[in-house]
Image 1 (cartoon, helix red, strand yellow):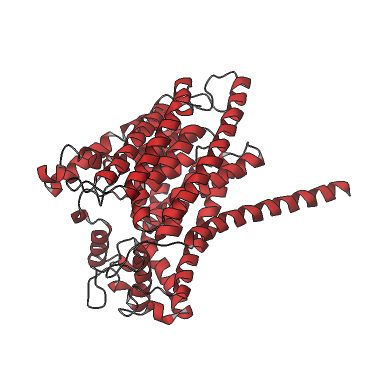
Image 2 (cartoon, one colour):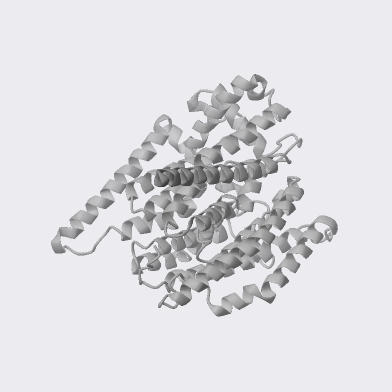
Length: 518
């Protein structure tokens, strides 16, 4: 009887913990959503909020074969649909619900810039519900898989850290986007890779690609991991044929999933138009100013004046591919290792963000995801990177009128996160001393520790405060109208490069000894 009561009590405790976590997660999103959003009351184009609402009306009012084509009813110059089919399908679902709740919010032409309180509540709720059904479950699934040997308090801490990333909260629930869907689908794929369920991993990664094309940032890591972990270059015991069969099965899943997503757009005319909309190279090397290599060197060299668009695309492609070579080496050196796979995701996404063509400041979220997954193993650099990545988007958030939630979240993140990452570091150090292997968990070395836990941390915080003050209160020099913006971007870029080097080193020097705790 006593054991039954204990089980009931334990079950009740688990339910209470889950409910508390959900309440914290949903409350944080709701509080951010009470603030402004991209393009609020700024005609004629408004912003990303209007783009998402417009896609709902386009998909519900027009025939499916007109969604990506310019016409009198679908002006592609006014937020034309430029995301893959899964985004369009979900827009249709949300549009039908919105049409039922408030028909005027989904009327062609007359609803442009529609901003009633009820329609804004509906739009905000679509993002929160999407997180509730995709992003939050994907994070919990990862945590209980990757950190299954950790205690429940560490698992909850990891879940809250990953799911409540400041940048993602501010962009999705402030600025207004649905990044949690594509990142959630990608995270399901990552977790299935860790569980060695490669067919399911392939399925979910294709879904992520077909929701948002920016998931291509992860594709080299997935491709080389699946290839090199399955293919054996030997005919001993006919293993080569077995490995080819495994790769063919993955290929079939990938092709079938793509076909399933693209069924209405499989004709040459439809497919070519959709692809044209997905990859708008005419927009240029980068939009606005972004904390990547090309914006950094623009202070000295204007690449746009020296090279044509075609030449820039080739230069970007070469540099992006070259900087990805370490992930191939890492996976080939130690195949089927979950740490190497996450490191390769970091390498791949960083290469795209820093060196590829047509980069947005918001795509740093694609780098933040794999880095945040290692919070219990690299607490210092993970915590610091998430801080810097959010800071790099401050100019965008400032333009959206999200300064108050930005500072509120950043202060909470610094204060709570600092204590959190210190407690993880102490716990990891205790484990390290108890273990015979020197760097079993890939913990930061002493020199790196001393840099970030002493004067570098305080110095960088001071620099960030100065950047904020200059950006908000100091007038721009007339001859340098983008000076403060470049200061934020280039400061962030330096930290991004340092972070890339750090994780590249971790990947290429990772010990082949199996980690007992995993």
